[in-house]
Amino acid sequence: MTRARTNANISPAIGRNLIINGAMNVAQRSSSVAGIASSGYYTCDRWQIGTASSAGRFTMTQTADGPNGISANCIKLDCTTADTSIAAGEALTIQHRFEGQNLQRIGKGVTGAKQVTVSFYIKANAAFTFGCELLDVDNSRQITKLFDTTTDWNRIELTFPTDVDDGSSPFDDDNAQSLRLSFWLHAGATYTGGTLNTAAFANNTSANRAAGIGSFFSNTANNFFITGVQMEVGPVATEFEQEDIGVTLAKCQRYYYKLNSIGNNEYHLFGAGQNRSTVATNTMVHAPVTMRDSPSLGTTGTAANYAVLHNGGTVTACSAVPTIATDGDGVLQHSLVGHVGSGLTAGDAVFLIANDTTAAYLDFDAEL
Image 1 (cartoon, one colour):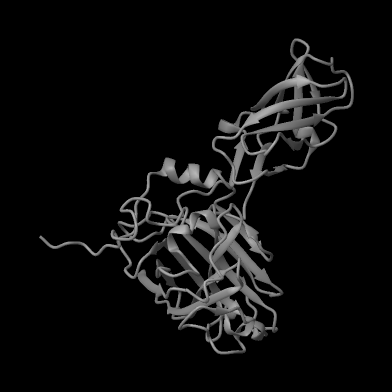
Image 2 (cartoon, rainbow, N blue to C red):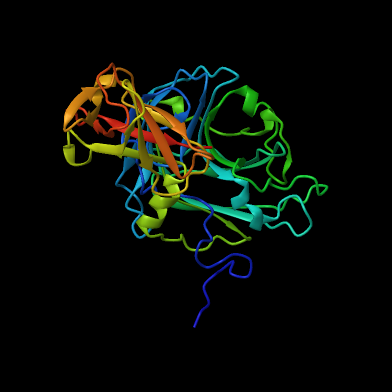
């Protein structure tokens, strides 16, 4: 019997992948967004686009084209507007951000710190050289390693050295962002004008972060695909960890969850509560999991898409989009205040519903 390669001596067999949604299976926001020009979360949960100053534009999709046996899904970037005149401050990255309290097994910055191995599956329309960076946000330290693409799916395995430093740069043990994994796909001289910092963690110098990479925006024919992303403690890239979709979804909902009008229900019920006056209501929506922090509330932005149901079934349209007021730490339940024009009876039971529209939604965002 041949023993499989493992980091089991320093990392659990299950739960060894520090990445959330590395298989790109969860996409609560959208499966496809075109014309992306600014930073944000667009499709697959926990994967943020970082952009700066570029005239380049692209479409981001959750695409059913993953490598067999790894994942059915991947992120696809499709360049729709090229940018071959690269200004100094331009940048394009795909990022994954980590809470410090989820990184303590690494032991960074102190004696006994461990190596970290990042592995992922990639392909592109042509051969490119891109960069994979670990950025210590708490202590402004970083390291980048280059990798190459082909037109076929390939697994890239990159082992990053320990960072003992002088014992002064451990990750904070809290729910804030401590580490950022970034895939550099385009950058100007601000980030490429120096010497790539590849051998060891060092204090962050912008010019050394992406030196030597190519440009995703070089041609509108360019595509980039990525899935099966894994980050684990130890010097070996183990087999990609397959995770139950329910577990992945719950992890993602710690940072973001969306309440849609399920099943094209034009009167979808969002929550129940009580009229707090003749012109305003409080309704409660319970989060499926404890969120990372007090979330912000997003909606379709149209007050007429929401209504309160009260007094034996009378429907009164909101005159302002619902806003959020969280209780205490704000992570277990949310108080949604749906303002209306008039006609409520203070103290009566109330329901917040989609007002004859399937487009209405509420989303709760506690992303890093």
